[in-house]
Amino acid sequence: MIAFIGLWWRPRSISTMQITPHGRYMSWFRLNSVGVVWVCLASIFASTANAGEPKVLTIGIDGLRRDAFVAANTPHMDSLAENGTLCLETRVTSDDVTDSDTVSGPGWTTFLTGVWADRHGVLDNSFKGRDAKAAPHGFALAKQVKPNLRTASYLCWTPLRTHVTTDADIDVVVTPGKNATASTVWKAADQSLAWSAIPVLRNDDVDWTFIYFGSTDETGHSYGFHPSVPPYVAAIENVDRMVGELIAAVKERETYADEDWLVLISTDHGGEGTGHGGGRENPNVFTAPMIVSGDAAMKSDGIERAKGLSSPATVDLVTVALTHLQIPINPKWQLAGSADGWLETTPTTAEAKSE
Image (cartoon, rainbow, N blue to C red; front, side, top):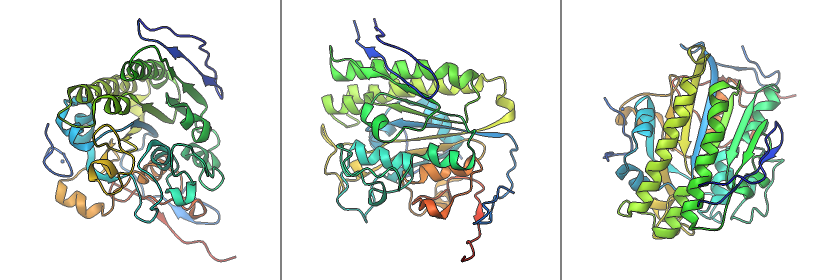
């Protein structure tokens, strides 16, 4: 039984809920067969075959270790990968920022801002040094160009809302309860987030949605981050089930046939033992799965995919989303990621003339 305490929800506000509970990839990729113009930039987008209205669904799965993801039964994420690209060696850290730890603070800030810690300033879970002016949330960048773009954020890790995701039109936060095991209450929180997001994805004119799931990380801390740990693998499979619910809601939209949805899935770090901090030299921690799926996503076999993507990283996520939403990348944003290799078509950008 789940109790919801103190719930409210309205645009530009935070919804809070207190929850108290009563195989298969042999290489990097698994793929079966696998003008908008800036006045100062003169950016021109290449034409796309799909003329539908672009939409983005970004899903963050905390603490998703790559070989455990491979071992888990994840039919919904597998299906998404088959309609796009999956990379199992996506970096969550930068070699150039050596003081950034492999923990959620810098990992999710990079995921959501499209820059590394040398620009966003977050080195650990304290969020000390966070520079929101230099590194705004991706939603804020999108609204600089398209002020009417409708965004939604669903998460259950409060510090992330406090320091990063402050720009959503629909802003839902679930606070996990503390009267049971951590993995159990976080599983309940994740399910509540999915239930909250489903009607919005099915009926709302939302353009870019971010949903965060935290139960995988909490389960890893309790039992271990490893493919041989049944509770951890089960947590991944449970998140996959919720991913399937979200995708089903998207496909039930009355306007779905006239839309061009792109689904992005990745994580902030992997894990080793029951932790992940200090993992900059451990590939089970600093590399992770990333899926880009949809009609606009690159679809090719592993060899071609590797040629198209020389340095995959979670810092690419914001650039990929903005590109799909037909928002020119302003060089002043100094984004560190790239859409090259992730999308079938990417914009070409002419350098601005000196003033």
